[in-house]
Figure 1 (tube, rainbow, N blue to C red):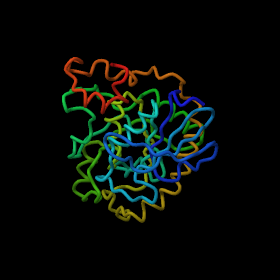
Figure 2: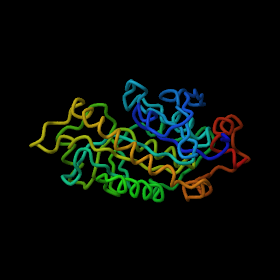
Figure 3: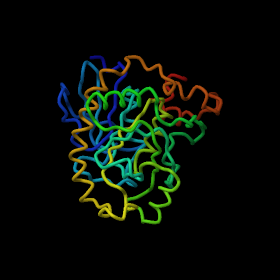
Figure 4: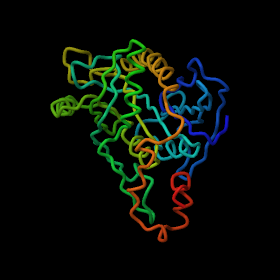
Length: 289
């Protein structure tokens, strides 16, 4: 298979690259101008499609949320011609109707992070402001919803993911506020991935795998790492089922709105682009040269 064909990226926990149906799996080291990704990528083929798997926290879960090099992760995938990303991520539920081991497909984000300079590729002489009113690819989210339903999985299509810094879990006061504001799930990793994917003209959607009720539900045991990891094992199998159904449905050519996100976002005139910055962002800006 030609490496130039548009590929599919999957960001999630370690072990997902071991799913059935992956052929010709091999590890691949990718260097980026932003440093090293979380781990080696695993390249493989599923249903005739090139797929790249990246364990977000590194194999063995070695990296905390604030230690993740999101720019390196997304840039590495874009440099391999990944044009669709499916994120698999653990979240806490902020609403009674979303139970542990359910799947929610976020349609919106609310940002409570504090490291925004690390959540963009731009700066250093090239300014860009991508549209982010709809931060998730609607087309990709619909494919995931259909795939989950066909797999017999309890799925909620749409909702707001509030992204906190971590690594500590919420206080009860914070959890109650997020709940009263109408947010649906809470996590520590997915918003930066979505922002950077949009700047890289990659369509992204997320399988938010519910592991707990955060700490607002006083009749439940407060959220703990032990509780979460018990549900993670079951959720990983759920994610594999959905991915196996979804991947064959993705189009061959990247012609969704997200794949043209920079056409109306680049502000700086090209003649003013610094050569070093242009080179640094060559995987993203190549088509504008």
